[in-house]
Amino acid sequence: RRCANSQVWVVLLTSEAKAIAMDAGIRSADCFAIDELRDCLFSQSTHCRGWSTLLCNLAVTADSAEVEDILMERVEDQSAHSVGWRADYVHGLDLEIYGFLPNRRFWGESFLHMARVAFEEESIILIAAQVE
Image (tube, rainbow, N blue to C red; front, side):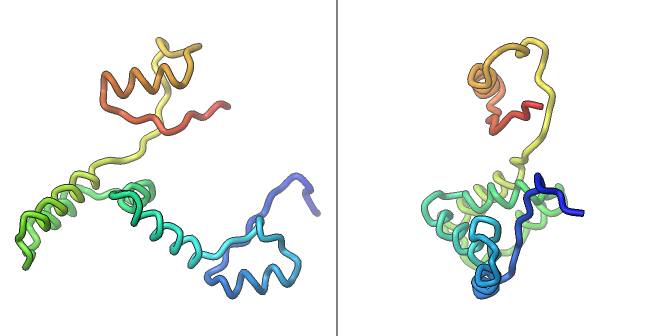
């Protein structure tokens, strides 16, 4: 049985497979290739320091043992740049995404107000809110 209200996306490994899917009649907007996504993410990471770390932390978290392993690993390059980069990376591993229900004091307030208070009082960055 077909459900006309369902949206289906086709996820393919390569852009060549995407071309074949489009030749078969699948709209470009309804399919994407993982290699294209990888290339776009890499391109964005060259423009914004820490972008790839942020994206990886959306899907993967590191426990304290993993962070300790990274900190204790011997690095041949002990220059200030190398040490600084490692410290930034380890700091970024601790930044994670969490869902939550807002405190009653924010009920009826705008998202902008809640985001401003969260940042000013707790150094928390609100990215999105679920409406329903």
